[in-house]
Length: 459
Image (tube, rainbow, N blue to C red):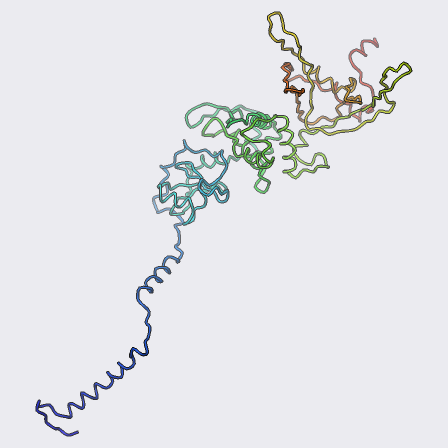
């Protein structure tokens, strides 16, 4: 290139050099020509995706309390508001799965994960201590670590009392006195049961069954984690009735009543009265089946082993015929039919109440000894039922525990009448021998009964 001077004093060679350096810049401009647009990712969406990735990253929860802070938040626990007798339902979702109880306010919440109701309750209200109602483990939320502190053992025991065999065996040997949180004295096993509305028929049955030693011991010591809800909830209630470390001197049967209402299709509820005998019959039979008992095999559950006995029933037909004078005559059939029935409780009939009043114009309330109404089962006195005459006799051996049902109510055309007759009995010296068939090993089953009148007449 020649050095040609210009009016500006700049050589042409320098100009060519500047042109050569300008050509690549033109080419770069052509690459980004508007006719061929290129799309570059905007910075804002990239920031949003980065934020989403950060949210989806699982954060590792705290597994243990900070060093030196093992009792953090434990001072917020309020034992006075804790009531574990009600059904374990989440107060928000009404779910029965994975339920926790807040030890500060006593309410039930589901779960303890970052999106659970218990987690949000801890953040919103500031209640941090929760107990799992199934495992009895205590956790601090929202951190999520388990608290292993001996000071919480009393809460765990009240929530789900557990006993050793030695402790259960000592219940009948010595009467213990216990005290509630408020300093009230009570005796374990003899505590009140809440009458929520009209469930007193249920309370009397459970109170009676909880004082049958073999049945009580079975439900206090056995593991019902794999059993149906009915025996499982009865076990919890009986263990709470005999709790020597209870926070209060009464228990609520709400949890068991909810299961009974569900299983009986609302035949027995806490809002309507029912006959205790009807409920007891239903309850024992359903407990028998829930514990694996058979409908055809006797003694296949603890219920039948304790309460089931055998009864011999002799039936004789009565026929009505007209004689020559067109008078109606009743004749007994020569054949006597004998059947063996099994029972869980015996029904005792009361004599009719008197119709007249005494000299003070007050109704007379009669009294009758238990042995008199038990004579129905002595095998000698017969009772007429429609066109049959029947006799009853208990068979050897008797069950370990007898359930007597004194039949007080009878239905007429208008109303249901109640018989006020008082039944007197000796609680410790009841002799059932006169009403039981002799032991077949020592006497023949058909051997006649030898009573006091027969002995005196023989002399």
